[in-house]
Image (cartoon, rainbow, N blue to C red; front, top):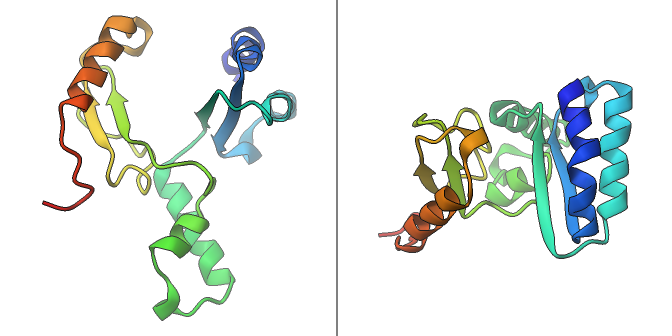
Amino acid sequence: MEIFGETIERELPDLARQGVHVRFIGRRDRAPAELLARMEALEEETVSNTRLQLWIAFDYGGRAELIEATRRIVESGVAAADVDEALVAANLSEPAMPDPDLLIRTSGELRISNFLLWQLAYAELVFVDTLWPDFGERELRSALEEYASRRRRFGGR
């Protein structure tokens, strides 16, 4: 938690100056008050920035997100027959977050690790052996080239 708070203080204000809108997704209720205040301040400071949206997953789990969405739907009294994809999506933690087009998974792992389970349904996945701290421009360009070479079908043939 301390390292994350220090990173917010050190790295993210530069992003704010560059026009990046910073948002957090995940379990805020378990964050220490001081860290939560830093997160909220950064979101508020960058709310009108439009150059790029940066979503930071903090204490996030896809299964927990789906459970919470389901609870909200059930508690709202919606009939089972009226539950559809749009309703589920509207009840996710951050329904305004667009679905990713690409997920780059570093470290040689070949799994998504409980990350954005709903949102990744039609994302393209690129797996690289490079560890995150060593992932740089060369690796990013390579992943983007691989992504660009694919024909996206969004579940169709």
